[in-house]
Image (cartoon, rainbow, N blue to C red; front, side, top):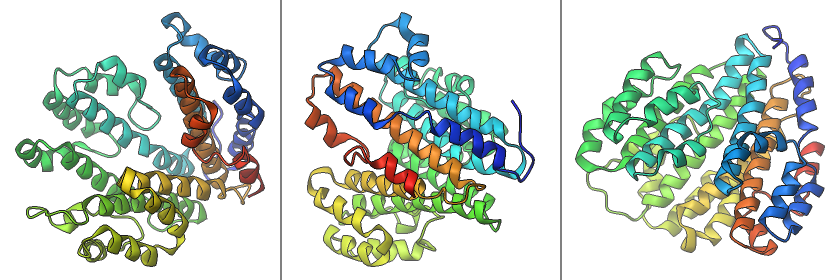
Amino acid sequence: MVQVPLKDYSYANARVRAMTGRLLEPGVFKELMAAPDYNRALAVLEETEYGEDLEHFMLEGARPTIVDRAFNRNLIRNFGKIKDFFTGRPRELVDILLSRWDLYNLKTVMRGMRALVPKQEIQRILVPIGALDEAVLLEIMNQPDLRACLDAIVVFSLEWPVPYGRAITEHLTEYLREHDLSVLELALDKFHYRNVIELLKGGDANTGLVREVVRMEVDSINIATLMRVCGLEMESLRPEDLFVPGGTLEGPEGFARLMALGQPERVYEALLSRFPEYREALQAAWREFDEREEKAFEDELQKYEIRKCLGMSKDPLGIGVIINYMWRKYMEITNLRIIMRGKSIGLIESQIRKELLLWEGESSRESAARS
């Protein structure tokens, strides 16, 4: 694969625009939604660029779990191409954008091992497109139990760009005492973003765009945490222990002040004031808070982040073109998963439509292109 010079995005962006042109047209989604059953929807999908990935697994059947693996293969294949376009600092920035999947994969393996989920089920939802490849993740996953899995992460991470094992080692005693996996997940979040923010200090406009993406990720984590814990009695846990660095809140003190407000209503009102750019997302989440709790905030803030990332491609020679494609591709695959899962259990179109990510009259792609 040809790699571009150190600071030249022109070649890579031209290739990514070609990849963007292969994203599914709104008409394909209309056809999928209108399909009378799962098999017909699968036939539609086989006529798209996902046909190659579906064919790769077809000997294993056409179950939704197999289709999920095909989607992951497609995502890995396309994002892998982007990594190969670059060297130098642009490659570092792409790696930082993709490192969120390392965090996702480690948490997925840990949760699966804790819940005694069959390893094939864990494997099908892994997305090894960051620094941790599938071979390493499978080696971790193939340990006999969660404790051995954690030990493997500690050992293997000595060679990783972000040595996540340190976070596990520092909090292992607490986890073994409480048996609360969120202790380790929070430790991984804090360690990950602390390292990433360090890599994004200073720099040019491209570094600034990646820093903005990371800031939104961290804000989402901190806001969801606040809405989860507000009003709870936590004698042994300090507010600063829950704070993840790298977001809009400059330090744990601001997080602690918000947490001290106590009741969800007061915390929500303070969030509206503290995060005016998230106002619409916060208001939408609050309307669903009684039913979905902090998950409503996670989902609405993710939608906000996607919208922002879709608007980052204004500079044709900057990394915003890459960010735009990554999020559009992620949104496409997320919606395909929802549609195929819905068809497999017999949901009607209106039920599926409610679950889709940024499904706005099939116009999200056109509005993204205009931005």
